[in-house]
Length: 470
View 1 (tube, helix red, strand yellow):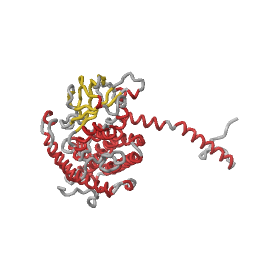
View 2 (tube, rainbow, N blue to C red):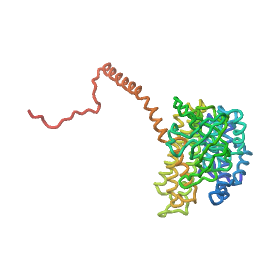
View 3 (cartoon, one colour):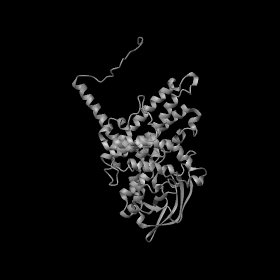
View 4 (cartoon, one colour):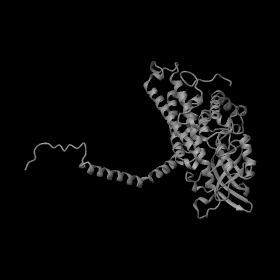
């Protein structure tokens, strides 16, 4: 590695493998522990120092920034491959293309990748490619895998997932109205998509698109299909990229795309007509937990900046270091507790997936999808506050990290959707809980009779004042 390893504790550096939570330790292989230590060092010593270089190499101007491909990212990818840090996200018990790690093991690594905005791409573990590769690995035909999965796994191309639409409430996917009409051996695609993350990049060669292929189907969830669309197909226009609270995320970008009479061969359908929801649900579950994994790392880096600023001897408001002000120590402590709690929830969800599949862990995934971004926003806000004006400027990564974390409350389904579903599922226990509580009360009555007791409140006083007049 190129620079002295940064300290991570008062006593010095603690290897990542020695910081694995005790409850997760039995599920982590020796191979994964070694890889975790490599990921930790690769992110801290290579990726984070290269972030400013990446940004400078993008240059100026929208057209230039979205046509640029910073050389530093390819250098990092080469180093990652040499270290064996490549495609760690595909779980070993679900995909033959896996690098040999479980969801839990990748979850531990993803936290460190989340500390740098270029680390995931440098290891070919960046969204939306990860989810798209899982779709192809899980549902793709042999021909589809040969054409698209191989180049994606090699890191030679990038991809985008096109689901959300600007003209409808896409939080309810049933509203998606992007038109897919069959014409012989082809599908004709018309409509618009937005928040197509990654589509701004010239290296994005594939769109995975959800559309309405059978609007009159009596089965609600069989009206939509998912199809593979080469990005250079005639009739596709990348109209613009969308900013994220002022950040454009070049060259990756989040695109608004127009489809006008776009012809795509029927062999490009994923799974077949009417199976769009099956494909989408199979993709979004892993995507949600991957976001949560990385966001824990975002919060950790924010806390590091917070602690460093609080102990900076050149910053002494009212004659003291920030760390000597009790309110700051309280905020640091709260941040530590919240990050550690969120991490355990994420790892629990990952273990649940490993022991079954994504469907078995829907509740746990929804919980971390809601919990982790909100936690990260709280930690980031405290870190930004401690930095004063610098915290909301480009002089620290905190403002950019906050913008990213804020979008996590919307992407892959807004918090409200998951919250309602969680609440609805919990509420289904209501009738049984009423019966249980009623049964317990009945048993209490029987016990009173057995012990010769009358029902009374143990705090009962029945105290009266004065003498009643006749």
